[in-house]
Amino acid sequence: MSVHSRGKPLCRSDELPERGKAQRFELLLADGLPQAAFVLRVDGVLRAYLNRCAHQPAELDWTPGAFWDAEGRELVCALHGAAYEPHSGRCLGGPCGRGRLQPVDVMETGGWVYGPPHAAPAPDDDNPDTPSRPSGHAS
Image 1 (cartoon, rainbow, N blue to C red):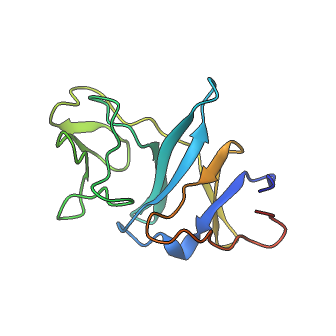
Image 2 (cartoon, one colour):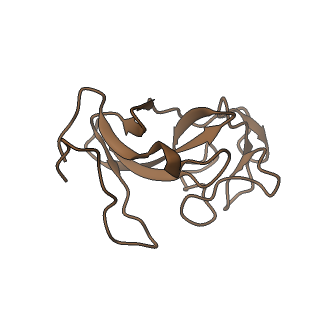
């Protein structure tokens, strides 16, 4: 997949409903290892974080892309029950203490969500087909 000046396309904007299922993606960290991340929409704004609990290095989602509590107010770690404020990633309770989720820069333009140049959409666990990308971006 080629890199656009905005970064790499992760998904279409309409694939991120308000407080709905998140889009998972991967980043290559400075050490060259991949790290899971996610982007979701909160009060009309995109928020993206590394998919790693502040308590222990475990992914948060209950099932792929499911991060919200039952009321859709907080992001919750499925393994430890740590709760995070979705706008800031700050720990609200549970074993995460004074920790917070690590933010990731994303942007939305032209009906698409873009991640950093070193990002790539995660394979869809329910559908192995790669989603279509905006024109001018090769897979």
